[in-house]
Amino acid sequence: MKKTYQYYLAILFFFVFTACDSTTKDATEEKEIKTEEKEVKQGPISLVIHGGAGTIKRENMTDEQDAEYRAKLSEALEAGYAKLESGAPAMDAVIAAIQIMEESPLFNAGVGAVFTNEGKNELDAAVMEGKTRNAGAVAGVSTIKSPILAALSVMENSPHVMMSGKGAEQFAAEQGLEIVDPAYFFTQNRYDALQRVKQREEEDGRSAALFEFPDSKFGTVGCVALDKDGNIAAGTSTGGMTNKRYGRIGDAPIIAAGTYADNETCGVSATGHGEYFIRAVVAYDVAAKMKYAGMSLEEASNKIVYEELVDFGGSGGFIALDRAGNISMPFNTSGMYRGYMNEKSSPKVFIYKDEKE
Ligand code: ASP
Image (cartoon, rainbow, N blue to C red; front, side, top):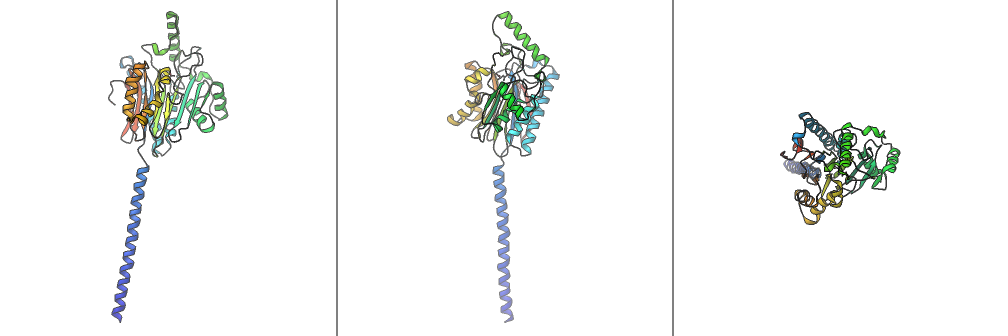
């Protein structure tokens, strides 16, 4: 009788033990699956920026200027990338990177913007979010310290996509954005560039723009970012073109021309001769070629910049990034301030055409 009792007890222990063991196993398996899911959801993060395309040649730059540009581009990349690394949305990274370049006199955006024919700085900027395809833009503003922030505010806090001039400035003030005296944007070298263009206009007896100058440098700024959730955001900020008149607005604040983002395809920020970029609907065309013609980001980018824009007469380039984190930085001018940063690399910055990316 005692033996039988011990026998049943042993069987009971066996079942209890097996049951516990399989529960632990299940828990481990579940954990593994969850980790995998997390890894799938948390895709690669990536950031690409530009600081304008144009006649930018090594022989026209001093070593100090070259180093200054590279340092500022790296700083912008690191600021944007730090946002992505901390898990912030792609748009936060775009704003952080662009604000650093807007505050630097090196670029044609914010401080250091080019001058209009009347001797003013009139700034354009836009942002677009790839997940929702929400967008915001401001054009021809002279008193908003950070036009890119104003573009974001239009997107987030208004039912509109684009605001211009005085109305945009009033909206920015109502939003509590920093308003500055227009003199905040002044830099002597941009002012001198205007005088040179005007002098040439007088000599030639026709309207000229800085793009027609062989030594001209531009400096629009832009950023495209991909965050850990697979969302793409793009932004562009610029002073436009030297000697612009009559309230001229370029491609930068025009969604689909100079700025575009769609999670399905890519995000784009352009720089170059805006009139051509508007007519060629450049930024959207990259996405369209991917969506409807099945091209890769690289194929679409190269076709537009090295074939179609060249045939059309449009000089410039753009930066773009797809949902897998691939980037492209094509341009058909002699240089474009540009750079990228991703999980595999520290900030990589480039200026001239012959630099290996
Ligand atoms: N795309 C800008 C504009 O036409 C200028 C530039 O990128 O340099 O306003």
